[in-house]
Image: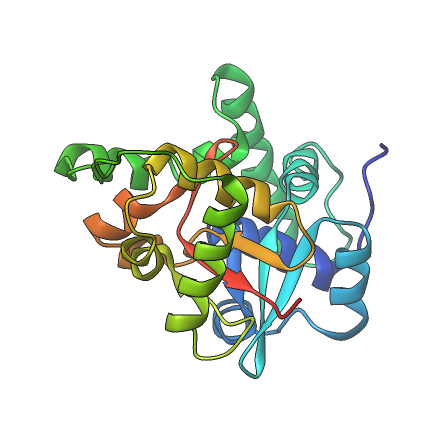
Length: 226
């Protein structure tokens, strides 16, 4: 697919969302960039499947999809938008970053979170040990457990909750089966799993409870009413 051209506001929001780890709500974007992702811009990025947006309370939370990461990577070799010298300088920096990625085996998403991952490895958090079980339950039953557990801890359907709050409520389900079911559920229309935007706020428990989706660890779960 050809690289999509956007105006300056949409470019800035996509690049800011990338720099924030791929997930942020509108108050965070407003504070960090000076504008929120809303209205026609949000609908366009959603329709293009670059970003998924979920209402969390009164504000939207936006999560970069694979196509969004690909767009940001493509922007590193794109022409800068006409305008300020500062904007053109930003694209010089993006080009330098693109050259670094070309020289390494890191994807853009991995590069953005590389230091955080290294910090987590240095502290050596204890992994969540799979519970001992006598029999493996069905995936369908485990999905219902996840949905029930989510509703027990969520303020309202569709709000984000940490996986650290959900996993302890799943009984003796094996860790690998829980992760597989979560990944399958995320492919549905009503389930969203996202990384924590503020990676520095993550505890060892948050990191250990994350589910690996593709090349990213995701820490937050939202389920809408079916």
